[in-house]
Length: 525
Ligand code: SIN
View 1 (spheres, rainbow, N blue to C red):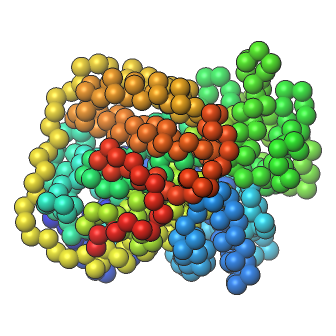
View 2: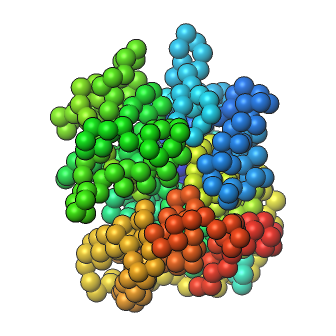
View 3: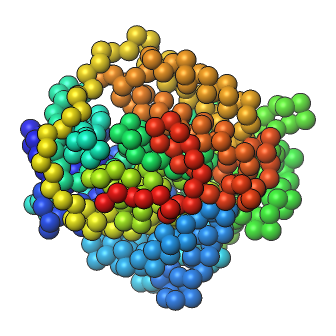
C-alpha cells in the first residue's frame, strides 16, 4: 500500500496501547498505525497470565492501588497508579463489549491470582493466551473504523522534527523505501526492549525502537535501570526462554531448588507469590552452587489437584509437551529472563512526553505507574488505560505547518556482521547489567557500548540494532548512577535501599542524568 505523506495521527506500534489509542482517535481524524512486522506480532500477543483489574468497586480498587504501590518499592507515582486502577474497570468493560472472550465459569468471569496481589483479580482468556485474545478483539474493532489505516511491515526509522516539535516520522517500507509522514501528533506505542538481553521472554520485535527514537529526538527518558526479570522462563539448553506464567504459581505451583527444598520460605512470607523481583533474585541465588556452578531450579505442580492443568494452561502445556515435559508429571526447569521494562519515554498521565507533538503509551512509556517493580498483570491494563488517555490528549494537538528539518537516515550498511554485534551486546548486557549488577560489570559494559558506537549508528540494515544499542546505553548509565538497590535494580555493591538519596526517578536527556520527582519537570504541551 502506498503510504500517504500526511495524516492527522501517527501511531507507531499495533499492540494493546497503540490499538486502543487508535480507536479513541478514530472519530477525530485520519489515524495511521504502523507496525514493523505482521499485525498481531507484538509483546501483547505473548502475554499469558492475564490482565489485573478490580471489578468489585471501591474497596477492591483501593486494594489494587495498594498492591501496585507496594510492589513498586517506594517509587510508584501514586497519581498514575490511581488512574490505572480506577479507569481499569471501565476499559475492561469496553473490551467485553467489543467481544473479548475472557474465561468464564458458570457464566461468571474467572479470576486468578499472581505474585504480590492481595486477592484474585486476574482475568484470563483461552487459559493462558490473554494478550492474544485482547489483541484480536482490539484489531477487529479497529479494522471496523474507516478512519484507521493499519500498515504492516513498515519500520519507523526516526522521528522528524520542526525545531523542537515532533512533526512526523521517516517510515521504511519492507526495508526498501523511505517515506516521510507528517502528523499533528505521533504516539510511540512500540512496546519493550527485551531483545537487549540474551535471555528474554520477549519476541524478536521487542527492540526498544520508540525509546531510542524519542531519545535521539531529545525527549526525556526515565527509570531505565528498572528492568523486570520474570522469575520463571523455561530453562532447557537449546530451547527458547519460553514464559511460564506467574499464574502457574497462582494456581499452586511451588519452586524447588536442586535439593528439592521449597526455598521461598527463606525469602518472603508470600512464598512463591512474593513480588516478582524478590522471587527472581531468590531463584538466581539458589541456582548458584558452592563453587559458582549453575544448579537447576524447578517449578513443581505435581501436587496440584482439582484443576485440569492441560485445559487451564493449554499453550504452556503444548509447548512443554513438544519438549517432552508435562506440568502434571514433571519438575519443570526454570530460570529468570528479561521480561518488562518499567522505564521508558517519560510521560505525564495523558501520554505527553517532554517534546511537543510526541506522546507515548504502554511499555514504551514511563508514567511511573510501576515504580521500581511492576505488579504482575498490570501491563495489559496499563496499555489499555494509558493508550486511551493518550488518544484523548492527542486530539488536542495543534496543526503544524513548517517543513520538517530532519534528513532521512540513509547511512550505508554497517561494516561488521550485524548478528555478531547483536549477540555480543545481548550477552554483555545479560552478564553485566542483568539481575545482579555492580560498578565493575556495568563499567565493562559501558566501555563496550562506547567501543561499538560508530559501527552501530543507525543504518538501513540495522535500525533495530542501533535502537538496542541506545537502550543498552541508557540502562547501563542509569544503573551506574543509581547507587542503591530497589525493586528490580539490585546492586551487589550497594545492596540496600537508600531513600535519603534515591527515592526519585532517574531522567536521561542528551546524555545527562538527573534524579527528580516524576512530575516536577515541565512537560511540553
Ligand atoms: C505472566 O503471565 O506471568 C506474565 C504476566 C505479566 O508479565 O504481568
